[in-house]
Image (spheres, rainbow, N blue to C red):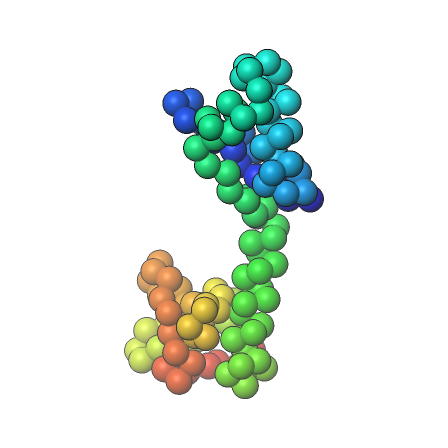
Length: 124
């Protein structure tokens, strides 16, 4: 099951629906509206957008998996999330990995995309 956010044209806000597919989410939303539309076809014409909503827990799991993928691809098994590192003369904290296969490092409150070759790793 997934969570889908359904937005209708001309209406403020949106509604989150738990369903197996986007199509079933639209149909369940149509049923929840209980007679607001003459038929399902009329309802479908009013749908402005539908999008899958990832729960925060899934985003966290995905972030850890992405970080581990970067570690493995770069051959750096000793690196860990939260590790304090140096980039030149600046200190930062590793907070993740990204699609460019670099590490995300917080430096002075800014999330930076840093190539591992530019990082001086400290020991744990």
